[in-house]
Image (cartoon, rainbow, N blue to C red; front, top):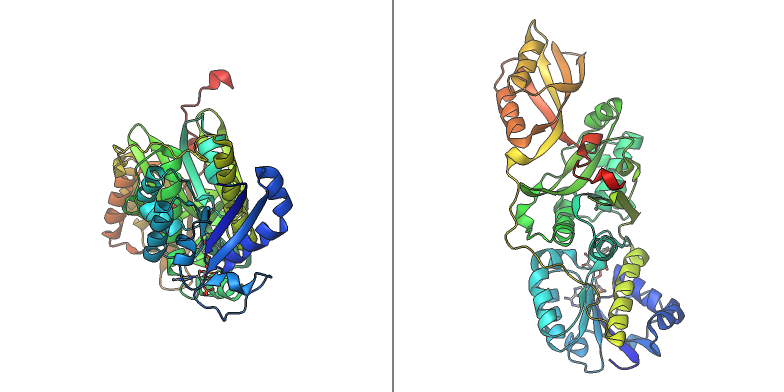
Length: 445
Ligand SMILES: NC(=O)c1ccc[n+]([C@@H]2O[C@H](COP(=O)([O-])OP(=O)(O)OC[C@H]3O[C@@H](n4cnc5c(N)ncnc54)[C@H](OP(=O)(O)O)[C@@H]3O)[C@@H](O)[C@H]2O)c1
């Protein structure tokens, strides 16, 4: 790498445009922070040369030919912000083999093929950084691998998808139903026309895989994530939750204990006094519990052109500094423990919220509760109220902690009761005091 850094960019959409903006507008700061004489953008790959684009990028810098970026010997570093999996992966492999460092925002690709790409990067003595792939502008990956490097992280809870947090905030604060909230999110540009990956939790699951791997050094794959989306969430449940002092959030949860590792994404009730409850609209946050540090939370914009580009360009700064100063790796990826064991359902403890419609007949409530008590599960909170019609009662229960295997058995037993017309919904409840692990060494606090 010479004293001038030449950058090639794959993609000039939302994030790509933000990167150009920051590289141009913060050039002085970047030069001061890296000590190089200049940082220049040399070529940018796009699909359509005729498209109207913001900013004052010279049109002859644009190319339809990826080789113009990947094979240009002058280019030191490639920023991949085109998205997608197969083509982006091929380009990254080629760039690495041509000894170009890579910075990417592509969580889909990193969650699926991160290990393989990191190996190729190491074999070619190149850097591969991906801070922007999780929670956009929040420097959470750096915080896990550097700021908290000395600690043993045991639990992470993340609101890592802005679309669903925006929708749930609207449903909670304005009483919108799911369809209305989705429409608003689409009108505001927070949801894609096909919102499946967001509302079904897949986007969050990919980010949780990246967090669990970095936070726990665990060999977690996408298939290991217990996944429930938010498309069946109703305004009624959100309102009942509020009555009970809870807020519903789509939470990515990663925890570890002696029994193993658990990673899940699902709508979860959290107490309204928990800091994650105050994360509204399209914002993201990651709550991290470390045995020594205790509770920390990282909050900020999870997407958008400039926040995401900030993370990308900060990775660029790390790469330049590392290469110029020769200080080893720009960011150390942990050695992944290939022996990672996933927790069994018997080892996953939580409280649960259940709402059911029950026939309003003598003894019905007793029969319902006996399904719980016969499995040694008692209640922390209960609401029972008549429904407007049909001789039915609405029953909302929040259990004390139990394990997932017992809870599933209770759900099966409950569905088999003739007094139960329907189990309307069930959600995990997290974030109470009992969730703070006890291993912390209080002697030093
Ligand atoms: N948007 C965010 O806030 C955000 C946040 C965090 C991470 N990310 C990640 O950042 C990446 C980029 O997202 P984005 O929102 O910027 O996407 P985008 O707006 O759709 O932009 C994609 C860009 O890549 C170009 N492109 C796509 N496929 C191409 C191909 N086969 N050949 C040549 N050019 C191609 C497009 O060219 P044309 O302009 O010619 O169509 C466009 O400029 C994704 O991996 C995404 O997951 C995005």
